[in-house]
Length: 201
Image (cartoon, rainbow, N blue to C red):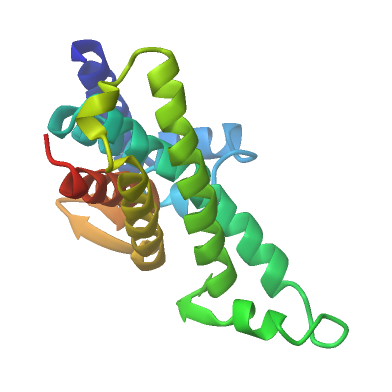
């Protein structure tokens, strides 16, 4: 844990430096142009938000809850993006008429299809996570008796809601630090909070 905190602080320092030194920002943006998204050139990289989110839930919650938060982000976020692009890319005609329902936008560019994909896939993987944790002896199985499925579902729904309200372009300027409502931070926090709410330990 101590070394992870040091790593997070180091990553944060590097990002602050990049944001405030144009030459370094230009150099790194060019070097990682295939990996960096357009908005990351003017604000913190998503990896920083992810690390901070993981650190916070690791400090606040038990191992099973923290892992649920991480899995919800790791599975749900890319699923929402992939499914959302796939379904909303269909056109009627020739696409079936029922696709109109799933193409409907909920918040901004977040579609019904993407949100449902997030919930279904993250829920399935969180359920599988419980079995993995039991196999490797990482969880007191009886302690969460009767609440494992509900915790997985609550985390998945909360994560999907967090993904809906996240907005990387909504940058909050604070002392020259371009902080955004990034889903890599909001999703694990929301998912872990919801899971812990079901079974606080």
